[in-house]
Length: 339
Ligand SMILES: [Mn+2]
Image 1: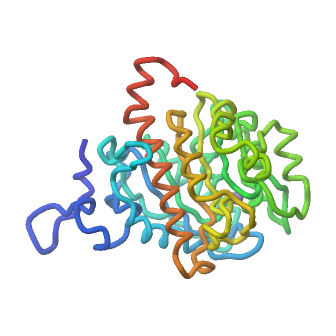
Image 2: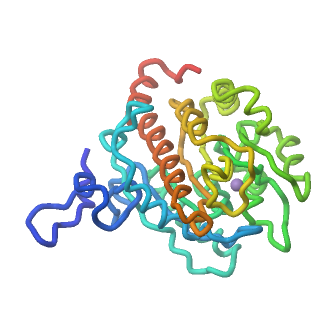
Image 3: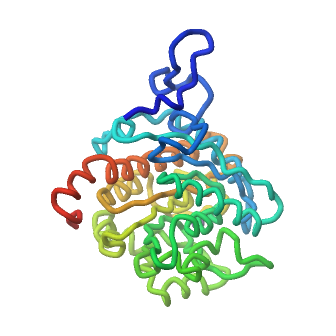
């Protein structure tokens, strides 16, 4: 396994430049310091930025997420101690750059452009791990990577269900991606669990949509009562062995840990609980994931971007492990992973 194709030559010398082997503060920041891909060839997992906040219903800023997450992700290293996995030894991981958005003032056209980009990623056989951007990006991602005959399931960490209807003239807002995805048949609501839901509501129709379509909604009160281990069990029960996506809205965390987000809600998940929860999803048939709603302007410490980068790294490790590492070995030896 080699990513050599992506290494640019060292301008001052003879050898190919391997960013993973240089000091982590040096050079141009890519996601996790992975090589920046020039094409979609020879990539197994693609790290992708979607720099838009056109879909927010309140405070903008998430368009700056990918750049700050790239910078903070320089602090991620190769080996994940919690999982015992080094994803870079398992498969070819590259930063695919940002989705090129040519309609910066037209949310509906932007949704089409995001979908078109991810269709190419899917056609190239690449599993996407993305950094938003606001949560409106996940609907077009689902349209690209799933279909009504093969919908995805989802582990969704968020303060909000994001299943609301039209808001001030658009149904494509960041409060709506999972309603749209269910209506389009690309998300299976019965294989969806929403974790960390809380806060006030403008309207109850989002929560009613989730429940009436069979999504498992874990409000923060239940989360804290059950504890992480039982929420992991419940997540694994809900999504089963089918293709599953992890969508991690950083506002699912308490704003103590992640204040840099458009719609913070106090009384949330801790960073350690979130890491334990993600690691507990090991072995699931994960086909992609994202970390959204990191809005750096509201957090001058930069910690929210670090938290976002860390969750993105955890998701990357889970996908690498399942498809290219021990998860694959276990799967072919024993059939479906035990739950
Ligand atoms: Mn959200």
